[in-house]
Length: 443
Image 1 (cartoon, rainbow, N blue to C red):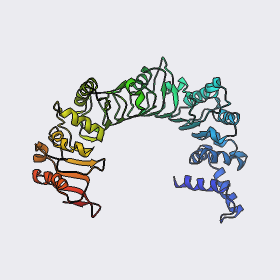
Image 2 (tube, rainbow, N blue to C red):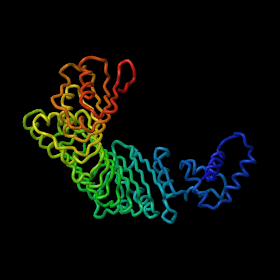
Image 3 (cartoon, rainbow, N blue to C red):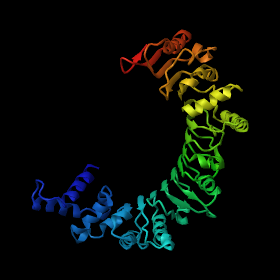
């Protein structure tokens, strides 16, 4: 590895003017590198950005075409004078006659206003076909145009060697066949699907998929179904304008091996989690249509929350934002929560007005060991902000660490909250809080 890095430095020095070494000394070093086998030289060039690797073609005749055999390519259409130059460059690298493998492909595309709309796949399709043929393992596609979406060639749907795939602002059309037997990581950001089943079929075709990240476009109203027997990490972000919220479907997740799930969604009104693995870590920022204030809307939201909560009851670590806690607080006024017996760590952000619901919520976490509480507003606490009618089981038997991310000034209302934990937690070892006169203090 050290030898490769030294060679990389020497190659870069070829383009530097008088930096300590004589021209003769640099030439001698380059001559020694030129004697190395071509596969090793290609490996050296793989440590350079593509544009720097191409510059080495001017070193000597022996280096002229060597960059074409580099196992990775970073290609950005914005770095070319026009589309013709971009396509010409890409055609050379993706020559179908070339058989060397491609480890990583990183393409950034920006469509020009004068580009023919029918020419979307005229160059992209053979490029991807060549990459699949050359056993590409990592693909990252990014479209920088706001007006156009490039269609992903179907040949990528049946790539037997693909390990990771990241797509940004692309169009995924449906296909009769999806088969990605080696894919472990999939990131789909602002993707347009021709129908709701496309994503479900894509994910189901990945038998070893471990991590899935989805960023949904603001005007995408589709129902998202994720079913995977292998998925371990799932991240989902969906936001939209208020005018579209009534039309948004929801999210269905069925992944029995899931260990980490983070959802930030202020749009979807329904969530369904099936077969969640015991001990999973959850991050939840949901509102289930919190803006619905009429009787029918409130009743419907309560039913959706009732269906959702049992699906996450096997989690061991939960992070809950203020809107989600408000939902739970409102739900608690009418119905009891299911028991979260496996939760040992809880981090919750809430409004001062919802603070009084904390003890009741903690009743559903009988084995809680670590609690972090933060306030997301600057409303001052008063004597009505917090009152405890119950002492949860976890305070009496298991709670060892409490971190109050709340600035404490010493007022009676604030100390009421602090004393609640000090007086009712016989096994408590650490109480951390923010003091006004210092950054933090521990009791």
